[in-house]
Image (cartoon, rainbow, N blue to C red):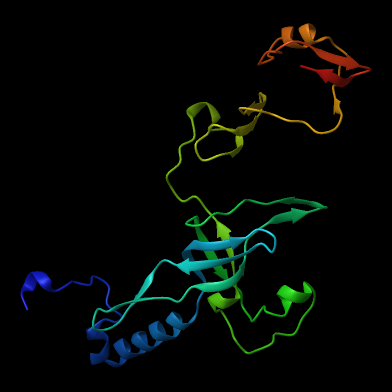
Length: 220
């Protein structure tokens, strides 16, 4: 076989020098034990069920054998996706196929916990395995935040066409169409023209807005 056909693996499964001394063997043994402890790994979404908030994900790193063979891990099934929740409110994202993120392995088997969401006894002796993980969506790269929003809290589409920007100077909403369902409470009872004329106000009113006792009751 020609040399150009041989793939050079920069990080083999072990350092051959470790097997030639007692200290090296201990290091090799510790390394092998640590390989069995699964903690955090980059992953990609294969599929996602929004109704159950469960995903099938693929861990993106490959194992490398002592002969240089690359082994891809089997996809993980029924993995909960992080949904920030508290006080009766939730922040949920419409995760899509090929979205990237991280899987975080739990200390113990959490199959029972996913059913009870309460104090539980682990169903097996399994520890630190990705099968007992949850998925954190993370846009690791491929995005850009404008200089003017560097100090703002952002909820934004990846392309930046729709976003809510919250900063010390105020709140800015960028959207092609904004719909409000329910009453909108305005701190001042002003006409559309007066609202639009306030210092620091952004945007325009297409025709008119009706405000009654500080509440927007209509507009166009």
